[in-house]
Image (cartoon, helix red, strand yellow):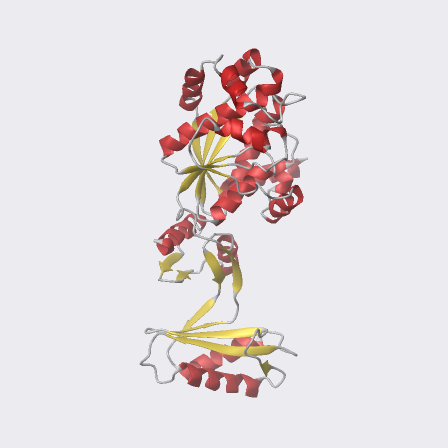
Length: 385
């Protein structure tokens, strides 16, 4: 199941290269490029969770003299001065004329004879020549490129990610995906208080993290009316608490509609008023659904480091305010009382407002190519001026 899901995610990531054939096996898979550009395919595949490593492989006939020629040709293209190497053979065809030790010795001797500057080292060599003896052919590879690791996205179930335009929630989404969770992004938009650029920025952030799993559902929730009603009826200190309770209720309803198992967010303990433990207790009161907080115990600098690694940081700090920022009170309650939160919320038509927001939610698919398309258009505009 894991391998099949990973194959599906790879196919989604390689939508620009329909000629590539994905052939999954038990613990590995082949990508038959059919003349697709190797480097471009590798760049698309590298971020996908569930892949430990990637190796360009040469398929040859089952002849050790041919294998020797290919290995020597490949090594001749490398800078071998002062380098170490080893031959590592895997033989799934046990009827082949040579066993793994014989193949290692045969090819190792050939390399040492052809390249006197190189030395054998079995532990952590500079170069590992991999030979895979299959029933149909031999496979030779010289390079191993680290993959993203983790679990294939979708193998751990579906969660709803509360995605703002800030630094933390895209990192939370990335970390959830790394553990195999399929995420659907829920974003709360408050036009005219928030700009179209703020919504576009958040979609671009979703596209950034879509690279790790293939594609993402993006749900835009209209939130202006709810915020206006909260501001009319709730004391200023409790605005953020009640607003977050509404957000969580709506996300939970969307989760139920999508048959997702949990909710994820970018809350980090103690970072802002709505992210103290007291606030979390008052806000979480509205649902029994599991809340996953991947960055809850991370320092802000550590979160920023991950954001820079996954290329979301520069986008996150663009100055387009989200709905939380626009309606944030100057002195929010850091230790809200649950009883008071319930009391103030009772002044509002909770069920009606939530139903209206859920019914007005817009759903669209976001892929990594969304980022490419927008950036290309922006570059064309920049070039004109």
